[in-house]
Length: 114
Length: 110
Image (cartoon, rainbow over all chains, first blue to last red; front, side, top):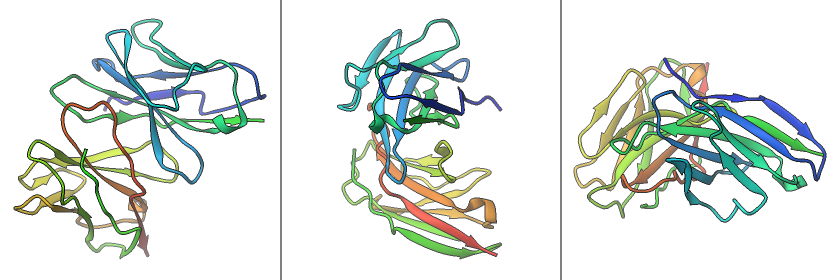
């Protein structure tokens, strides 16, 4: 069964450093998402992406964040200058098209900012 | 998207049916009921969704009341691996994001 994959599974970085989290959505899916979950808290929406542009973003997704689909398979989340409070699990999700609303989530990347 | 209310926690004996309730009294006519679960900080896993008819798949059954103001997710024979947080989410087919609340923490007991 096709699935969303994410790399790395765990990323440790120093405060102020840039990180790139990578996702490979399900191959025929057209809509892509990033969510995050701070330890012990709810899963929160960050951004949605369709047709090579952001379609919606939350208040969390400020100028420090960016997303990109650099090729036909990868979908990345970049945090330009990490802060301690960026430590969280980051989940990528994808959905097929407009006919469905079901999003499929990857296993997540645990980001630890020291 | 309509707000949902779920009990914070439930226990279920292994092998028995787990019935997880969800109230969504403000649901509107074009909004679907979705169920996801999250096993110990893994990515949320899609379980099932429905509009007004009851639905069944290989994982679970979804029973939606006739007035659509509440629903129940049924895991017919719970196993230890079903221990997870279960999220009931109501949404229309137009939004981008899923709003995850606090869900129900289901513990399956041996």
